[in-house]
Length: 104
Image (cartoon, rainbow, N blue to C red; front, side, top):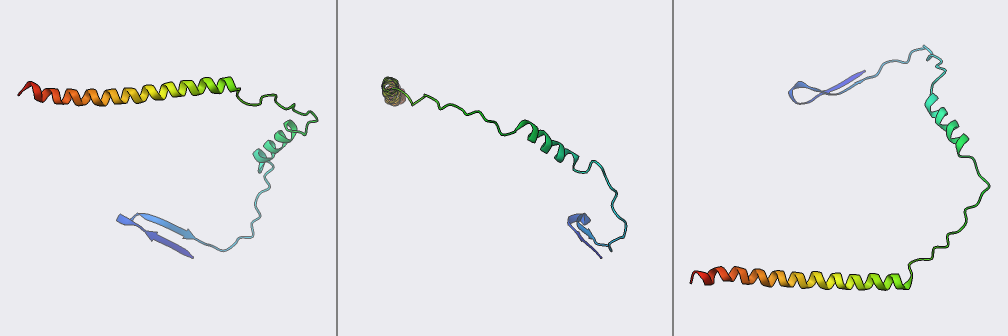
């Protein structure tokens, strides 16, 4: 049984061909799935269950002083960006109206 479908400009898009089953046995290949078995043996060799225990970390977070310094710098940075933005907007408005005043 055959099925085929042609696309635009006569190009072949899909082709199926189904035949009867043969009685020929597949060849016995010694290295079939060799790479899969090799990786499995490799991982089993290197990742065995160990008896050692990892000690808990003594790190408990940032100190209060570090958080205070970060807050101060964040506040200064925010005020600086805000003041710079206001200065830039007002300066731009003055420069744009200055051109009209020169030609009057």
